[in-house]
Length: 297
Image 1: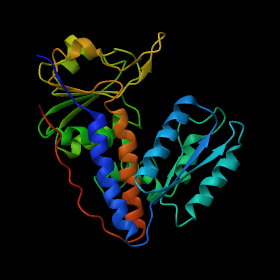
Image 2: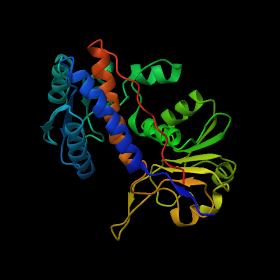
Image 3: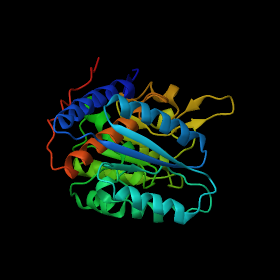
């Protein structure tokens, strides 16, 4: 058996088309979603992410700009920028790419962001809303994983889901989102005893640790869905995930490639969050998203 590919590029295009339609609906009411990124320093991954995000946001009809601060910026300068953006009504979403340069307190900065404008879903208020099952802005990458499952009719209800990784960016929020779908969830990590045995019983595996090929192909239960969130650059320049793709695809039912799987979904869900934030802040409703299911062939 060779796994079917969970094509993040194709699904991201669906989401982005729906976001563009929603933005057009808001534009008819004189509302243009506004997104501002506060980029500190010259982290290469953040630079690429911001360029891709800018392009996608403009294509969606958003007003988007990037505030660039030097890596030597002081904590007070960064915090003042966030406070100022909180007060601007035309700014509906604020994004501060992490990690921040050494010496800056990311937690303090995140806590300053207005929860209504927290399109990364990382403020304590939005984290609490997720944990309590209340409405709020959800973290983009785990929300993108859920979207991939939905668009390929991969039901989570009643399934055994193993999340390898316990970060606040992916592992923990995905676990909570899966619990909302009535999955039985195990959070494992790089120090879990008998990690292979935990993975072998999973109907759905989410790998988000940041270690190349940590999850071996023979750990995968035949027919399981595998969502590989890891992005690791090898010495030869290749990008690989946390799952040994070549062997895992011979056992899995569904699997995400790296690149081209979960990655494109992060920006798509950032746009969806910004659109949602703009609608809520301006008292507008949005047309229902199509949520068409991708081809399962």
